[in-house]
Amino acid sequence: MSELALLGGKPVRTEPFPAYRFIGEEEKAAAIRVLDSGILSRFLGTWHPDFFGGPEVQAFERDWAASAGVRHGVSMNSATSGLYAAVGAVGAGPGDEVIVSPYTMIASATAAIVFNAVPVFADIDPETYTLSAETIEARITSRTKAIIVVHIFGQSADMDPIMALARRHGIRVIEDCAQAPFATYKGRSVGSLGDIGVFSLNYHKHIHTGEGAMCTTDDDELAERLQLIRNHAEAVVEKKGVTNLVNMVGFNFRLGEIEAAIGRAQLRKGPALVQTRRENVRYLEAKLAGIPGLAMPKVGSGGDHVYYVHALDYSEATTGVSRDTFVQAVKAELPPTGLREHEGPLMGAGYVRPLYMAPMFRQMVGYGTKQCPFRCPHYEGTPNYSNGICPNAEAAHFGRVITHEMMRPPMTRRDIDDVAAAFHKVAENLHRLSDRAASKA
Image (cartoon, rainbow, N blue to C red; front, side):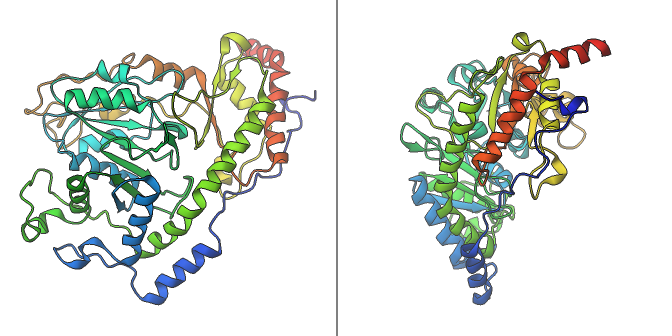
């Protein structure tokens, strides 16, 4: 095969991959419908019929709740806001701990800090990269108030054992479903398995409204608390007759009418878009089968996968070439994707550095100069954010995981053939990469 592009050869492909562009006539019509109505938002931050927002927001919440099989949908302006509201709704506060994953977007952990609770990191399962009941149980203390389970990369954690553990200890469970809309676990939708689910509608998710989110719950009280925290709780509780004032410090986490109308149109497209991802992954994995040192993602027991990213497991021991060098070589063979040209090929070595390595956790500085919540007078624990606390997460990020998005619609079979060709070209020239590494040593 020809010389590797990383070493000066011709790349497999230079034509950009097609953009993930699924805003169409339905969304345009929805936006125009809202503009014609003259109601861009109908939220009022007081106890009033408009406390719950306008007609599109409320219809979107009903539509999403029905699709997830729950009683309540509560929209938010972002999944970060949704996570913050969820932690507040379950009553976490000073002196409490919230168990979180170290291998996720950092908002999953800072959601605890917003209410002055302390994040405690549990390790991930080495095959699915999600939290497990075993890793969670090792972190439970008398201070544990909640668990945030992240359905990372597009598949559900093994939720039955997690829920049994949580119920045994009286702990609330928040599902971070940002990367897993339409995923299921034993026939049930993610977001319906714990106490509260949080879905993202950010621009690079499966479906999106630009920015936005949806929380889901079957619990009437939790739904009310989510609504209050979303919309100036402290100004509403008295007239609404709310007597539980814990965490009733409100924000403005409200979604607009245009975003909600677009979301309703996107929600109808979601299942078909997810099915295309699954079909593309099956096709790509068949093409990649047999490449030494490269294993396809494992799907956990009872779940399915909606492939926010395609996470491959790499073995340097098999190839003799570091994961980072292998990724650099594959990326050199491929082009960027439309609308995201500045990012280069949508592929990475690892996902995110384990969160406890961030300055906030290493220096334990949150609010003010008193190191709250980490060393708050109300907190009786001793946070541990040192290297080695989550060895599976560290091994995954620094040596094993390769993530890429080059399987999303509207990628065609030809596009995927080029992705597979890049992997095979590099795999067939591993000796050249080994020689390169040796010459630099």
